[in-house]
Amino acid sequence: MKQIASISGKQIRLTSERWGHIVEEHCELAGMRDEVLETVVRPDKIFVGKYGEFLAVKELSDGKFLITVYRESPTDNDGFVITAFLTRRMSYFNRREKIWPN
Image (cartoon, rainbow, N blue to C red; front, side):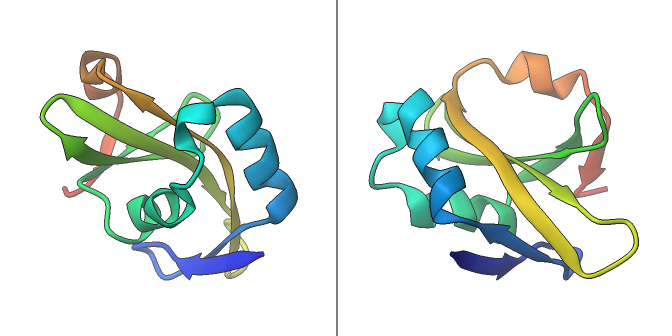
């Protein structure tokens, strides 16, 4: 299990089991575990998802973005990565509420 701090200072964990599920669904992310975590630590933008989760965005190359979806506990210093994926469709995310940078 790897643990990092989000921009709000909460400890976000990525377990080996969760990483296995992510890579199973998004094989293009194999070998990119550090980049997925780095997106939470130093995102370009963070949006709010439909169910209160956070969508951290990092541009990897011109027109290609890594999205790491994670949740933070509102009551303690805890959180976890839900999933991650690559996309070129930022217009979908730009319609959401952006919470960072504000």
